[in-house]
Image (cartoon, rainbow, N blue to C red):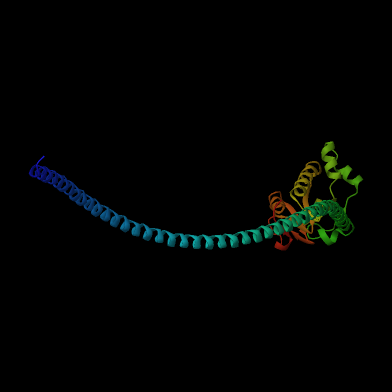
Length: 282
């Protein structure tokens, strides 16, 4: 091989190598550009990530601050809860003491009610005894008043009839001949039958005596007076004698023409009895 050919081949090889090297450099340059572009994009992304990280950290700091405030509030609430529980415990203890006192009071109330029941029974028994005693005393006073009227008829009856002569049971039986057994019984049970003069006229007087004159006293004496008047042909005056009179009895006495001798004062039919001697009702 000649030198010129060898040089030519060497030049051709060098050119080929330079061409390959230029291609490689071109490719490296393009790769470098792509790499730089990718790096630029990566840096931009990193910048964005950094900014996002900063925002995240800021939010985390805000959340941490909010968490600290929440924990502080929770601590305050926990403290308030502890105080509430302490107050509730105090109230529960007070409630237990109150319930104990209420139970003691309830027990005392039960004892009091039992005692009151016992006392009420005693009072009821005493009231019965007092009523019986009052009735007995009333009867005794009534009998005493009746005895006074019979023993001292002028003191009570002289303003109605005078002279006053109280008839015996035998005399009552004698003047009541012609009456039925019931009518005779009514006359015999009258507290007093007397005879005398009323305004110059011979009359009989039938009286019922009691501390307080009631309607049935007036009814009995008016009926007895009518019965006696039927068989004697004489005027028979009915009278009630007492310390007081029920208003209804006084009104009935006026209608049945019965005299009222109340507190030793005689009131003819139609005359109003002194108010202090009148008791309302029947």
